Length: 259
Image 1 (cartoon, one colour):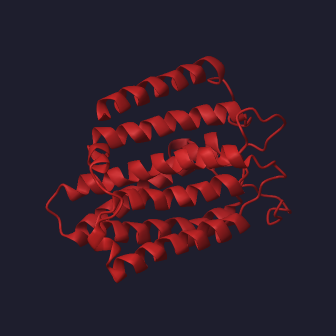
Image 2 (cartoon, rainbow, N blue to C red):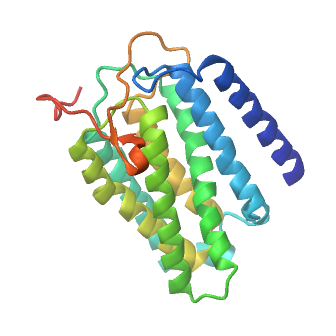
């Protein structure tokens, strides 16, 4: 089963890569087109899934139940599951949405649900891969937690700052909102959900929490469908390490206006 899945991911990712090289390779980062953004995202999702497969994470996932009968009867487990989802609802469906600018883009709810789900499943798997790797060493639980948190945080920082918020998402942030979202949503999300993962090893529930968060971010930034027409605000960038462009956020006298 995993072998066929691996072949499918490689073929799909290769198709998207060829499409990108043929159609969008010369597109400047100052121009945002839905088709290019979707193609780049699908290549990234393929990479995430391949990392999960090659680290052995996917094989372990398919052999695990969502939850055990003992866990379902454990009050502490139930409280922590609810806490994770309640915090994500507050942090992303409420706080994140209020700090996001959309420049009057249209909603594409059905498409956004599909994109957010694929994004969440892919991101959840690659983050889970870091936990799986460190858990193979004979470290105490707190050591696995700290090393996994460091790797997850570094991955998310590099991917979002230097790829996602430059080449995939249309502009949806300001310099202020980037900082606030990091402190109020992203860091606590990983810290809380990883703690639950280390304590109970519910791989699928960890992935579901990240999917729940990323469905919200897709909807509330009004991520356009691949066939959407019109002009879209490309992300504003600034110089990062080695002079590479990184997400900088929209700045103007209207930067706090919710559009």
